[in-house]
Length: 266
Ligand SMILES: NC(=O)c1ccc[n+]([C@@H]2O[C@H](COP(=O)([O-])OP(=O)(O)OC[C@H]3O[C@@H](n4cnc5c(N)ncnc54)[C@H](O)[C@@H]3O)[C@@H](O)[C@H]2O)c1
Picture 1 (cartoon, rainbow, N blue to C red):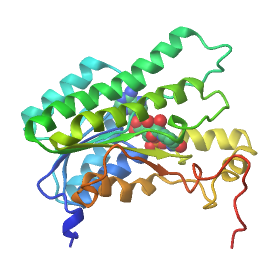
Picture 2: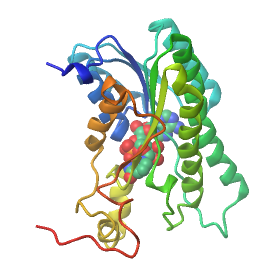
Picture 3: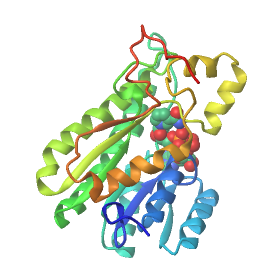
Picture 4: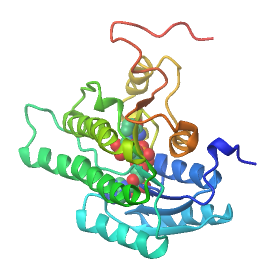
């Protein structure tokens, strides 16, 4: 049985990036707490496997192929949501691009692409969701941001980090504008969560994992499933008075000053 505070029965969620990683983990956690879902991704085949897993839990799943860097595709996805569900209670704003580039070399075109594809596109999802939620007088928006949205990452993460800074500030501004009308807006800030791209980079550079771990006091890298609890918490009435929050999902990374070192591990 789902504890009442965390119960999402009768609620509808839209989650992007749901084919794998944190988007898939968030999707399955929301479904497990009772929500029906529209799930979106560019990977149509893998999205179907997420949809099947949701249906096996007895919930409704509508997979929609959508490139969330394309504003027209985002708007079409929301129109499909209106047709199929006629309701939106939760947005999980997860998918987005993450190109690298050194600030001294980066083409301004790439910089614009990132701001458009990451920050403006995430805002478009917030705007589409917010309009519907404000009309109903309630809703919870969960933006996936990054520790890079509030602190510097280095290693050529410049465009991504600047784009995520916009997502962090968007979360505070939207919360301030909308919370009085029933729509809470929060962000989750992950540190390094293992995904296929990161696993490949760690394989190519044997020092990289140790470097990451030196900034993670808990002593392990994140796994996609680590997002399950925070996602259900922020989506549900358990977080009714939490809005505008930038919630670290980082094993203690943001709490650790650069001059500090993690304590001894058991
Ligand atoms: N993994 C990390 O260490 C980390 C840390 C901080 C923030 N983030 C952010 O969290 C989000 C998810 O990361 P993850 O590690 O779970 O990623 P992942 O690579 O495991 O999965 C990303 C999913 O998004 C989909 N996707 C990619 N581009 C898309 C697009 N344009 N339109 C629709 N779907 C698209 C992919 O097909 C995939 O299913 C990303 O926005 C990422 O920037 C990740």
